Amino acid sequence: MPRNPAVRPVDSLRATYGNDLYISRFQEPGEVEAQFAQVDTTVLMKILLTSFSPQALFIPEKGFPGGLSEELTLPYWLSENDINYFASKFSKTGFSGGINYYRNMNRNWELTAPWTGIQIKVPTKFILGDQDATYHFMGLKDYIETGGLKRDVPLLEDYVLMKGVGHFINQEKPEEISHYIYEFIKKF
Image 1 (tube, helix red, strand yellow):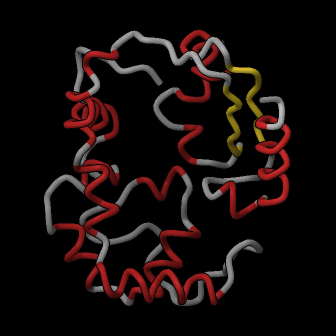
Image 2 (cartoon, rainbow, N blue to C red):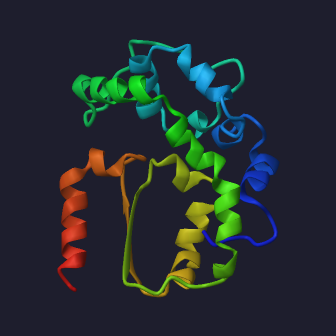
């Protein structure tokens, strides 16, 4: 979505969704890391990778949505080996690196000021899943479906809305994603 020059993104998100939105909760260094550290990393990875729904975007101060169950059912595209691999890496590094992306949103907004209103003018194909929480967030669905994306990305050749697919689209449908990418780039 285009940069709004009048409102910093974190301020806008807080005003719209409150302080329980994950981006709002991630702003205070050390706070969510301490909460994450109280949970087994393997269990936390299962929660983070299986709960990417609109409800999961909210992390109340008292805990995680749906509780902390080790008995989470993994989706077809995610194995225990995947979970163990990710958990082994995050056990060593912690989560600050990834969380810092969200802490830097307002700074990125400041740095992109010179490009306010600029269209993206490269050939583009946009692929997303209809079950992705971000698709149903902050008016993105309406922005895409009513032509806002095409207006701001005039060389958008196509957008693909994959049915029954969520946020981790490249893992959920790797062959289809590879096919879409290949068919797009072979034109050039």
